[in-house]
Length: 479
Image 1: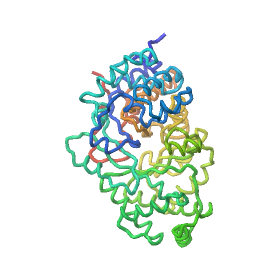
Image 2: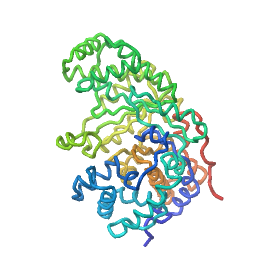
Image 3: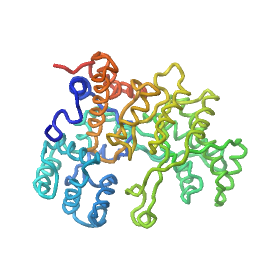
Image 4: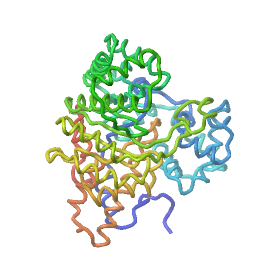
């Protein structure tokens, strides 16, 4: 029996062990989609204890704690940070089989050198050991990113954001990490939501474009896209919980927008027409600037009305949606392709039944010039488990080019979450190792090691073209 989470954790054959330790382990990280705070990065936020770094804002852990019968007082409530830590320690043994169990112990090992398992008995000692480090030098937000060998952090930012801290970080020549904005215009597409008109006012102020009609609205969005680009942005992101497509003319959408400006709510058909036309317009802007466009599809958000009213969004009450995506997704991509303005695009679905749908669709829109131009995004949210990652990668490899995959992202609000890249890389290496052991591919370590390093870092570096990003590690890291 192997020791718990030893150096060869998840690596089940000699080829996998070699691929991870000789090729993958030391590769840098490009975190091209996350929810970290640029303000906290700029200020090198110091954490008062492990709970603040670990449990604040982490709805993955909150969901597990609720399932374990932990009262909300000890999750998002007024209990002390130590009490919340103890509640998490009580929950951890119950997460066996969930990636949270392995992620928790990877973070303890890699950041704090703690190899004990976390439970109620070990919690007081681990609390003391971790806090002695995290409150000292070298454990601020910036430091943790550097310790994790991260080269690029791409945050998630509303078009109306000032990007103040991105600009300050850009001027800081001593910080070796590029922190760039990601353009997330969800509030500008959700025309029927109560806060839409207020948001239009914020967009007007941020863009300095007076918005009296739909033409003005598109102009204001373009101003903000250009501003993000000047600050270093090369990525957009869209949460399309329901993938929609409804053809419309500019004049139709002009009337729809005008109606909404009066305060009226719109029909579902009108809403779909607005979203479709606006999304295609934005896609053309992205293509013109060489950006990558991300679609996050099929989430069902804020399921629990009582808890949404109490805690708000992004608190652990979301789930997988089951809307059909093939027809509207193809229609959006094809509309942009017909216009000669389809940008690099990354498509994620929260529903794993969509894996082969997406893996097959992307190959209808590759351009024969840009390797992997249309990407099947990595397993996301409820799917970034061992099995979920394997299912996504097997679908991609079965009908596409696994070797052109741009790999893992954290999608996290935690500065300790970068060990998820290690978890992912171990799974990649073991998958390829299994193919070798089964005689399905040759044991050509130069070829396979190059593919591993491409998926870990080099493909994303070439794909996004972030400014000032250095080359990855040489083909082998053997000493």
